[in-house]
Length: 284
Image (cartoon, rainbow, N blue to C red; front, side, top):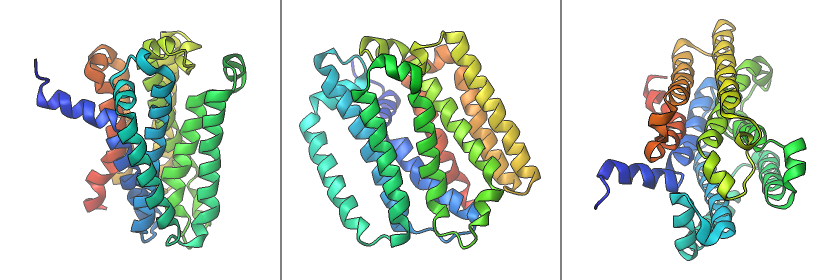
């Protein structure tokens, strides 16, 4: 039986990390508007390709580790088509290397920091024992921090007035809590697959009810900080409604978990929130 077109589209987007990659591009443009900085389109494209490279490499490494035991569609596809995906990864890496020569040098230190933190994540995730990670490392907390740095601070690099970051500390908290809630939700939905693959996540440490409480608490905090950012004039009403839409989407996914578990809808809509900024850019 042929898969319905909409279902095929959802699985394609989920498997190849389309939304989160496009979301890094749209988030860069969005935060550039907030910082009143002229966006560097080469940097925006580089961020988009870099995010896709990291997510795809992570899926590929998981797939190679699982081999025939892969239980998710994205891991199975990455394992079956590993040669093609490896070729594409090398091609993207070469493009990123060439682009690095044309990116302003002011970005080098920050990009180096992001690469180092990403490399640290891979080292810890694949080389450190599960007992040590259980005690000292929660990947969702760490990845949320790196994603927030990359998405939110990359456009800040060329901001003329660096004081803006001090004034936007609540905004940083908003985006961090959104990222953290999203990652915890993904771990919640992927719990069975992670257990089969012997992959540790926050969902393997706490029960489902506790995980949901973490998500609700993080989203509530994000909404409160969004209101504070609005009150402090860090953001305008349109920015506030955008963040509220992202928060409400994650709330709905958490509340109706059975519906969003089907056909990996949670991953489709969870990643799609990063594309929301692209929809409001014409009005900013």
